[in-house]
Structure formats: structure tokens, C-alpha cells
Length: 249
Length: 234
Image (cartoon, rainbow over all chains, first blue to last red; front, side, top):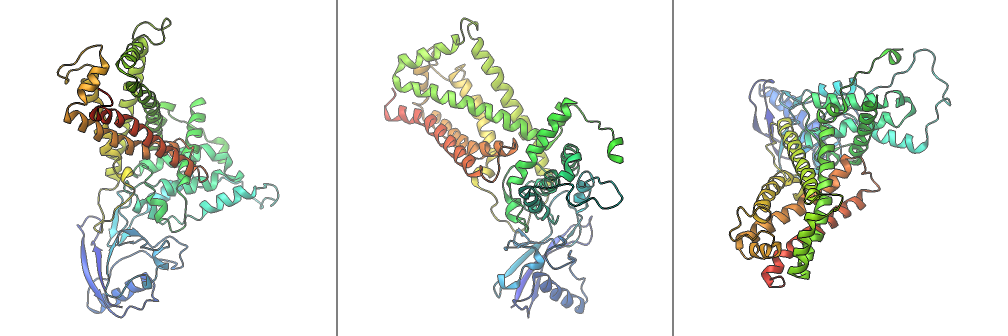
């Protein structure tokens, strides 16, 4: 396959960026999208150019490191991560636009790499459970109903890649935050911090400069792990419950 | 254990709500529902126009004495006006502040553009501005008569027919009512999500209710100018 790539190039966080056009040849349709970019980078290095910087790690679709907006879609046209997107999705001779995640809370560090540490700070403010140290608790001491376990697992699938923020016209982190909150709030292990978790995580989300939710549904469409849109309504419900309780104290 | 020693200091409930994007959306959802409830009553009132000038004018006069003898003359009307004005202002201020924030949160746009979200969703902000301007015009036209040449105090039926006998009266009204339909279509469903009522099983029902509500209200309101134009109401 022969492709024309239009890639966002930006030297550092403060430098202005622009789209640069590259031609790549000899792309197999069995390559992943990241392998295709590796091929481009090998060519750039041979030619004495700077390779394109992009995030990647496990290349198995489970770590959430890869983050490319391909032809306007986070992670490209398939509902998967960029590393699991294969070149057979594209046609020979295609022109592909590759851009970084766009959100004020995710500043571009270089080329296609953005700083997603705002997500870490949301997690730090409540995305954990407090457990006493010591020997492991007896496994049957805390039963979890099957339906709750399934619900928690559905939301635990979030890999924190940030595709939801990239897809949202408001740069909102509601889907990510709701996945983390719903995952822990439904479980008995998460019950002690049920109220403080949702209030603190939503407050941190706002402080980090993410936008609000206008229910466009773009986030859930882009999510490679299929976190559903009603998760946001479930988080709103948790937030309203916690805000009422906090007001009563 | 860290858990037990932590003192939870939280701001007041008002600050919690007004200071949060989720809280501010709750304000928008609640005020939006108040306005939809009012519109449902308003649409029923409008339908009285099909029973003739006498019925419609009597209904108009009753609005001034509703709640009597508990409520003094026009008290009921003024209570409704205060509640509605508060709703419009809270809804508008929240929308303005949240929109400013949303635009700032996505300061750089993608080079590769593609249409995002449905038409009703994308037009919420402009639709809201159109509706805000319409409310001002509507009050100046049919309540105070400021922009209404030949306005007759105490004769609502004649004033309505008069307004919809002008081309601009019809255009302004019909455009605003179409914007209203779109606004309710996305707004009602969104309000349910914001208030935490929405879930996967209820989603279809909520979407249907939103669409039916939007369609019914828009159709009822638009039927009045169409009635005047076709001579059903004259």
C-alpha cells in the first residue's frame, strides 16, 4: 500500500505546530497503524529527519497509551485502540490525517504526544479504596452480588486512554470520571468513600479545566472499551446523592 | 487508619451546586423542566383560540383572577411571572457560564473536520439564544403591546389574529417554535441524564417522551399562526 500521511508536527509545548505531509510506500495491510508509523519513522531517520513522536506501550489494546486522532476519530474508524487498528481498514492511495488528542487539559508535549496527567490527578482525588494493611481478608467475608460485579467490571474496563475527552466537543472528562466512580461506588469495598469519591473526583475534573457535559454522546462512540453513555447519568445520580448528604451534615 | 481521622470540610450546598459543572447542569435541568411544564399549560391555553373570541378572551381574563379568593387579583399571574423569570435567568446564566468553559476546554479544533452529534444537540446554544430573544419579542408584542401597532388592552383574541396577519409576525413565531422543538428534543432527554434518571433500559422511553413532547408542543403552538393564515381563526 502507498499512503499519503498528513501528520501534526510540533517541536515542544510552546512551539506552534502545523500539519506536515509525508508519503509512505510498502505498507502491508496486516500492519497495525503504529507499525505503519514505525515504517514512516525509519524512513525519516534514514533521511536525517526527526521521527514523529507518538505514545505507545503494550500494543495489545490494554494499556491506554496510544492516542491518535485519525481522520477526525480518536483511535481511528474502528472501535478499538490505535495499536489494534490494522491497515486493512484503509485503501491503497488513501490520505490519512493524524492529529493529537485536542483538549486544553491535555496540552501537546511534542508532535502527537499529549500530557494526560490530569487523569492521574482525578484518580488521586478518589479513584481508590482504603483497605487496612495486614493479612489478606477472608474471600467470603464480603459477598458481591453478580449484577454489581458485572456492573463494576464493565466500568473497570476503562483504560484511561482519553479518547472520550478527545472526541468531546467540550473536552469533557465525564465518561472517564464516571467509569472510575461507577466501578468503585457499586462495590462494598468502595462504600466507605462513596460520597467523598464522587464529590472530590468531579471537583478535580472541573479544576483541571475539562469542559462540562452536553450529552452529545461522542465519548461513548469513541470509547475503545465500550463504556456506555448512561454511565454519565449514573455518576450524576451519585453526585446529587452525595451533594444532598454533604448539605445535611 | 487514615479514613477515620480525616475531617470532611465541605462548602455549603449552594456553593457545591453552583461551583460544579454537574451542579450547574442540574440547575439547567430543573429550570428547563419548570419551563416545559409551563409551556404545556400555555399550549393548552392557546388551544382555546379554536373555541372563538369569547372563550379565549374569558380565559385571558380568568388568568388575572385565578386562585381567587385566596389570591388577590393578578397575584397568581405575578407568582408565575417571578418563577418563570427566575427560571429563564438561572437557565441562561448557567448555559452562558458552562458554554464559556466548554469552549475554553477545547481551544484548538481538529484540522480534519467531521460532523459531530445530532442537529438538535449542535444547535442547543444558538437555539437557546433565539428562544431568549423570542421571549422578549413575544412579551413586547402580546403582553405589553410595545412593538404591536394597534394593540388592544384586554382583547387577546384580536391581538393574536392581528399579530399573525403580518408576515414578520408569522416568520418570527414559526422560526422560534421550530427552535423550541429542537431545544426540547435534546433538552428533555439531557435533563433526565443530568438528574440521574436515565439508564440503559429507560433510554428508549426517555428519547420517545422527549420527541413526542417536542412534536406536540411545536405543533400546537404553530397551529395558531397557521389557523390565522388559513382563516380557521379570524
